[in-house]
Image (cartoon, rainbow, N blue to C red):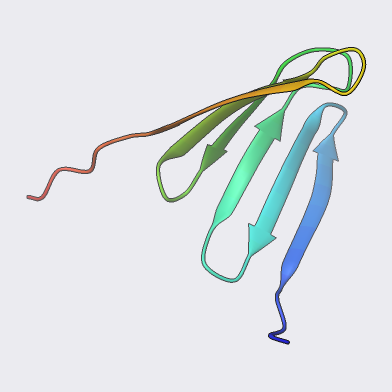
Length: 67
């Protein structure tokens, strides 16, 4: 079984810094509302917990342009 590295730090109330082996991300929002995550790889995720066994998540990946 491979080992993984993931760590999450609370910077301010409602703001978290998430670090893993390949990237980092900032998450804003709380438990009762939508959460917005922006990753260093360009991924943007909006998620929300809904009542019952439901959850909602929308992920987009921004295009990187070569220069």
